[in-house]
Image 1 (cartoon, rainbow, N blue to C red):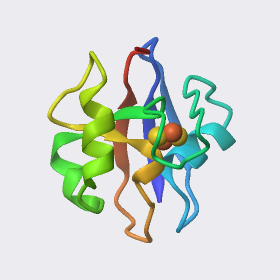
Image 2: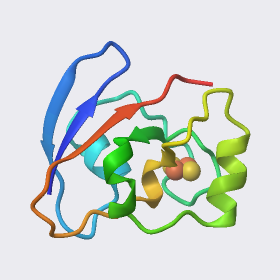
Image 3: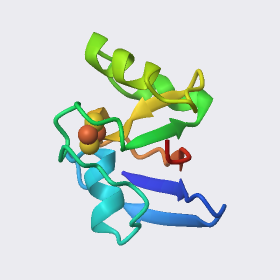
Length: 104
Ligand code: FES
């Protein structure tokens, strides 16, 4: 799937994400270095926080209690907040739009 990622400066990046990869991995592999992703995708650090376009949140699996708890620790949580390491890209051709949340 293709992703449109809006970075913290407001710049848009169109990137390719292989099926089965997490959005966090795709963002990092495409040279956008704003996600610390300190835990490497284990859902324990909350430094991979993104906002998913409101109309596209249903594209991804519902969040777990762990993800929900971690997002609660952020000062920047919104209704469309997700941890990008928990968002797995599938083969749907639709472009997914998301933006990187401010650093806590
Ligand atoms: Fe740590 Fe996503 S990379 S929670």
